[in-house]
Structures are given as C-alpha cells and as structure tokens.
Length: 217
Image (cartoon, rainbow, N blue to C red; front, side, top):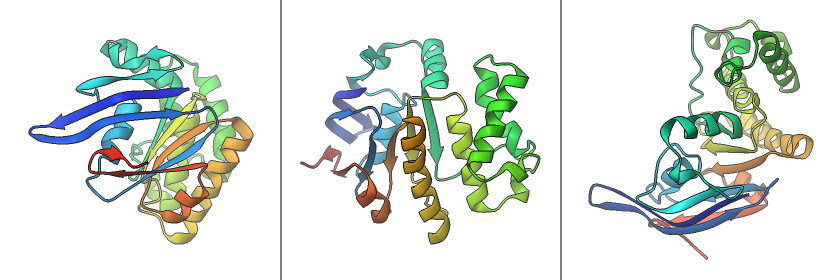
C-alpha cells in the first residue's frame, strides 16, 4: 500500500535520512524504533506527506504523493491519512465532539454526518459520556483517545503515530496499544508507529529499527 524508495533528507549540513527503502502493507501494524536523532520522526513525516524528501519518492496505492501540489496533497492527506502525535493538539475552546469533527468538516461533510461519525467513534473509544467536555476537562488518556478518534473520522487507510504514548502513564499506554490492534481488527486500518515503547514495538507485526538515518536489516 505504501512504498518509499531511496528517501533522503538533509537539514542544513546534517543528513538525517540516508536512502530509506520501505514497504508497508494494508492492515499491518508496523513500529519504528531507534535512538533519538536516528531519523524516525522525519521518516514518519515524509511518509505521511507532512514533509517532502530532498530526493526519492513515496507511493501510496501506486500514486506518487511526493510530486503532488500543495492543494492536491492537503486534500489527499485529509481523506486518506490520519495522524496521532505525542501531544494531542486538541483545540482547547472546542468540545471533544467538535475536535473530532474538524477533519470531516474540512473534507466537506455535513454537520449531521460529521457529528454522527464522531459520536460513534467516541462511543467506541469509551468516551460516549464525554462528548461535550472540553480538553481541559479530560484526563491525559481521554485526550489522546479523542485525538485517535479525530485521526479516524474520515476513515483513512493509514494512521501515522509519533510517540503516541509518550505522555501517558503505563496503564493508559497499555490501553492505547490495545486499542490500535482492536481498530486494526475491526476496521482494517494500517498503523505506522514511531515509539520508544518496547512493549508496543514487540506487539507489532513488524519492528523496524533505525540508526544514523538508515533502516537496520
């Protein structure tokens, strides 16, 4: 489903990615591990179209997204890709339901359709009783689950997660790990996860390790 070919990226004189080749298959849960500075987050951002490589290409269902224009890419990202980050990035003035609806509104869906989908997702994630609560009224684990629901609201093919349990205690981290695998089983989502959490990495279908801008084999 997702292919990266000879991905290279520099920031100034620092070569962060040194020729990455990678394939991700539909329905996989893939973890990417490695020391800080290995290039994991940069690779994730390029795979998820948030950054462009200096050279190489990324193909998503055989469409080369690295050559898309800014507007086409934004539309593609909104419809096909979901993101979960270490910091949930919820908008504080909006409720949980409203935060989850935002990508659906951007995609042009009606308020009724967006809220119905968001409500179902939040209910599935154990937050049916928190729809009208704002982020400040939610625990850290609840906020991260709202972020997961937001990533899922447009039924993307792949979810990219960058240290999704980095700010969670061990109990909430385990619950979020389990949730990813349940969602994969129920909805067929693909997950690509950058993590320092070895428990999550070992549970994944594949554990890829990076060092010094390269994937170890």
